[in-house]
Length: 339
Ligand code: KG4
Ligand code: ZN
Image: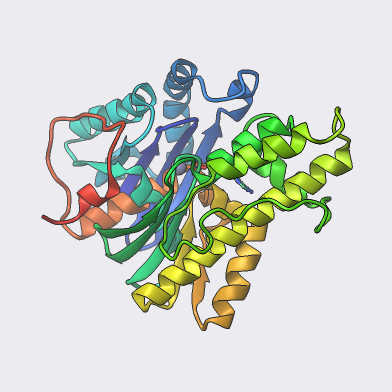
């Protein structure tokens, strides 16, 4: 079965072709990061307009890359939510119009299910069940994953998401948007032991997170330094901030494995691209006799491949629900669980 996947929930237009026998055939992405950078964040109306411009050329390019045509498709998967409603409507409308004209099913996909299943696109894919850390700009969640569509929330952030904390702290350090990768890069020049920031909820005993206090602590720290901050000071703050976030994330992942009795962890979402997080998780999991799986770096952030794959899994498991098309800007992943 050949599935086309379309992602347009935020600031990336992603298109991909997944074949249930031969795997991922082709994928293409357009990132709007440069367009939004001058505004310091995503401007929803501009995002929608840009998706409209990009989606069909990307689709043509992806089909050409895989040497396929529209008539080869068996289904079209698209991100139905959560995300920006105008942006979601672009992918949703294109997917449903195409599916209607080709007389094939359109498969609505939950964006986070896409992230969650992205590590299964890799050669060393884990088998179910596993614990998943979903760590992106909008989410910081630990889930117990029993199978496709069977997700139990183990822990969540009580305030800011980890990626949001990276982005806000990067702004305080005048690193622009999106801040996560820039902050991680600056942290490489940072020195340990100069500053100390809090590891919020490290010993709370549960699997929840809180990152807003950390952001406030960075603000106070900056205000206590001589202005303007020199590059080394900014790097030292970035270093300690990254240590604080990754210490808490790694600790709670290991705790989740222990509490569920599982030995496999998958990490996905934009912050999953963070090298320091990967180093810590791999080292601690090895000590605990567990395995960690990641998507390749380019599939940590938003992409069409994860949507095509999640759609293919849903089609394989006969989990496609016929419906008039709609978008779900707010959508709880646990709503996917069988009743
Ligand atoms: O999954 P994603 O592309 O979009 C959402 O669904 O949110 O994640 C984007 C988030 C942003 O907050 C970005 O700053 C963060 O992931 N991010 C990183 C890194 N790369 C992306 N944070 C830390 N280190 C990175 N290397
Ligand atoms: Zn995402």
